[in-house]
Image (cartoon, rainbow, N blue to C red; front, side, top):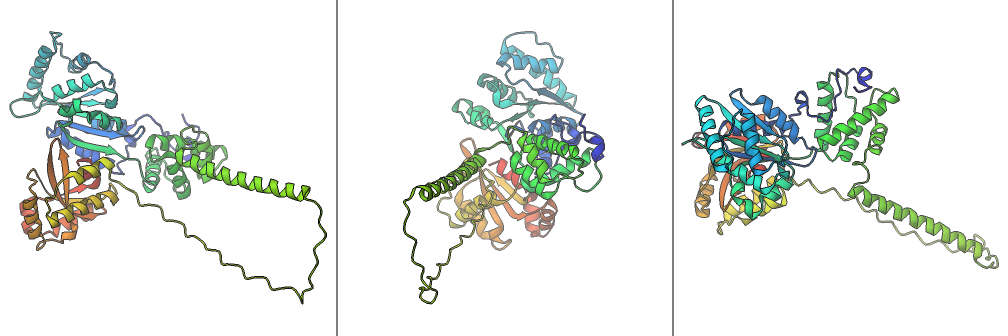
Amino acid sequence: MALYLEHFGLDEPPFRITPHTDFFFDGADRGATLEALIYAVVHDEGIVKVSGEVGSGKTMLCRVLMERLPSHVETIYLATPSLARDEILQAIADELQLKLSAERTSVALRELQEHLIGLYAEGRRVVILIDEAHAMPEETLEQVRLLSNLESSRHKLLQIVLFGQPELDATLAKPTLRQLRDRVTQSFRMRPLAPPEVVKYISFRMRAAGYRGPDVFAASSAARLARAAGGLTRRINILADKALLAAFTEGAHAVSPKHVRAAVADCEFAQLGPRHRTAWYAAAAVAAGILIGIALQWLWTEQAPSQPAPRVIPPAQAAPAPAAAPVAVKEPEAPPPPQYLGAEQARRIERYSTGRQKLLAERVAAAREVLGRTPDEHYSIEFFVTDNTDPARMERFLNRAKDMVALEELFVIPMAGGRAYRLRVVYGDFASLDQAAEAEKRLPPKYRQAFRPAPRSFAQLRGQI
């Protein structure tokens, strides 16, 4: 139990690193991702992938998903990704309390399918949540693909959600797993929290733990903590806990930058990352240069032979000193704007051929630009998604659209799926869901009836490229 609970008026520790669903933070598009996952599971979306760095909150998202799925959905949670190909079948059967009568994989799959058909007839659904999927052997991932093929005449019998580190994306990119990759219908990325989101995250966790006063972490303290943690929630939790303890030992009721520095000094992961090492080396080089200069000056003064004293020129005869040249002060360079679009996603957009259609090329380029600069929590309005990617057809649509909406707000997003592309047409960039909903009401009635427009977060748009 944390020593500082009573000191800060807390009911329980606010920054435990073990997933606790009462502390699920739905900011930074976590809530939107959760809703999309629930929709995908309930509506037979097949295989869904969620990737993110270590400590980005994947396991927390998985636990919350298990809690919030409807009661008719049975969840199978696999936390041991090193299962062999045959072992994963047995693990699923054990969770369903099904005894497989044969060891042959083909027979076991058929028995599992019959059992799932029976559950489906009762109105029940089954979803497998596989944690740490990046560590799965390739042959086990191939078995996952075969499991995704289990279906009735019209419906998928088994939904699968893969949670893994970015290495999962690299694994699925292998030619040997292209059939599994093509079955991933939805893909989401858990990005690190931006500094303003870290401030909200810390405040949320404190209040979820029972705190009722003004914010304990000053903005400067939270910003310093965010930089040291790299936006990863697990690291934020570790540093915030240590900073609270440092404040408690001094009897302080507010966490200052000094307390955060003490927390950083106590964490190995926050010690001199690549960027900080570079800065440290530069500072060390400057300091070394100064010391060498001082030493040389001292040696020169001590060892140089004595010279006759210089003749002093009376003030009246002294030549005027030359005017000092103005020192040019270099303005600090502004930091580059954040880039939200991954390199591979940008390449996928660029590989789509616009067929020399001028308007289409402009709107695809505009889509690439807005996807690169717009934060995850912003929204756009989706008009439609189409498998017909004929450039001439899309050019005709854009020419007609000029009379209906502001064309500079219309974006065409190519989405690569296997060997074929799909096109998503969206409208606008809105800072909140409410703004997007208001803009949707102002669309031409013809568009509202023809397209059934719906808001989509930029995190979702990027995740499905």
